[in-house]
Image 1 (tube, rainbow, N blue to C red):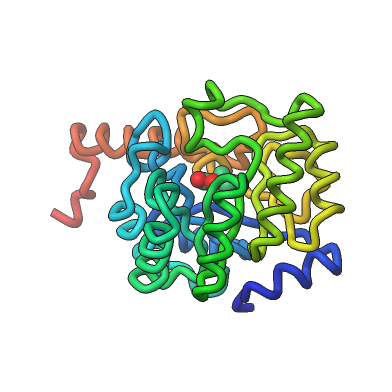
Image 2: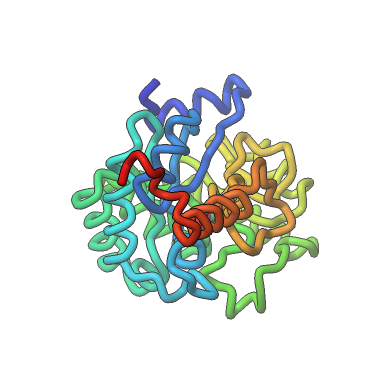
Length: 263
Ligand code: KIV
C-alpha cells in the first residue's frame, strides 16, 4: 500500500499503530520500506549514524538532500519524510521555505520534519503548510537544541516544562502539521498530548500510548556502537558483520577465497 499523509490521521482514528523507521541511504531505505514501515524518515540522526559526528548540528542542507535522494530510490510504499537540518529553517520563514522547498523539489520526499513549537516555529510551520509543504513537528528532546538543554536528557519532567511541551504540541497542530514526534518525555505527558491532539503522535522514548513509534533503523538492526536507553536492537548486525568480514580477511590470507575452481 502506498501511504499518503491523510492515511496517518485515519490510522489514529481507528487506533491502528503507525510504524516509522529512519533511513540514510539506498539500502536502509529498502530495508525500512520492504519491512512495511508506514513512514520512512531521513532523520538528521544520520549525522551521527552515517557521518560520525557527535551531534546533529554539523549536518548541512546539501547532505540531507544527497542522502534523501538515495533513500528515495529505495522507498516505494512508505511516506518519505526528511529532516530540515540545524539552521536551515530557524533563521527566517523565507529560509525555511527555501530549504523545505529544495527538499521536496530535489529529492522527492513528500514532507519535512522540523524541531520546536515555540510561537516563532508555529509561524514557520503555517507558512510552509500554506505553501504546499507538509510538516511533521517534533517536541520534547529536540537534539538540535542539545547545547541549550545541556545533553540528550529526558524533557518535560517538571509540571512547568511538561505544560510548555503540551502547549508547543497544540501550537504545532494549530499551525497545520500532519503529525508530531514526541522524543524522550514521560509516558504520562505523551499520553496527555496524544489524547489532546487530533493529529497522530509518533513516540521515541515516550512510552506506549502514542499513536505510533519511531526508532533509528541502525539501532533496530544493532549496527550502532551506542544506543539510547529506549532503543531495542532486534538483531546484532554489527557483531555478525564484523565476524563475516573477519572470515573474509582470513579466507583471503589462507587462500580459501576465491575457491580453487574459480582461479
Ligand atoms: O533524526 C532522527 O532520526 C529523528 C528521529 C529519532 C525521530 O528525529
